[in-house]
Image 1 (tube, rainbow, N blue to C red):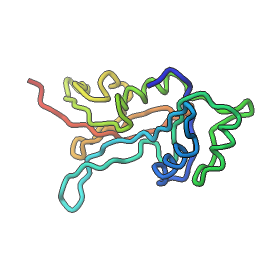
Image 2: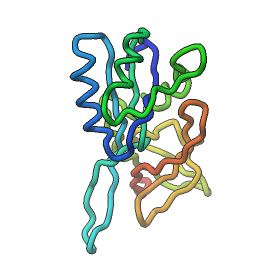
Image 3: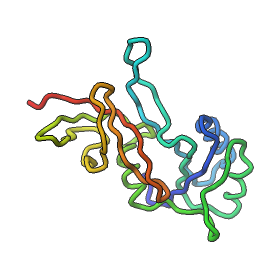
Length: 171
């Protein structure tokens, strides 16, 4: 992920990918990256386990770059965009610490994959995947469903998201 500033757009929930396409088209050759963070989740449907891609923060699209006043007005004209998150001084920047954690989870892609862990003495030890080194953010685990509830902050607001986790038997 780039060192430039990150911002968030509040958009119509469930339409994030369509709105992303519209934004990319409208942005054109400006140096602004549009990101919809997603997670790969293991879900059971009619007794069969399958992997589904789900939005990490429903109703939000992240922007990476330097925004001008013209850019801010351009975003508001895109169908499905509710508003750019801002205060009276202009667009609100997502803190470096919040983006560092989100970037680590997304690794090299917009999709957060599965992590691998095991229990040791009542603690969860993550051995691989996006949650490696982020054990302190895990607040609950459902071994049967293969999900970890993780507490993340975005725009200063705490959010609990579920990420895929697989438990392994240590050697």
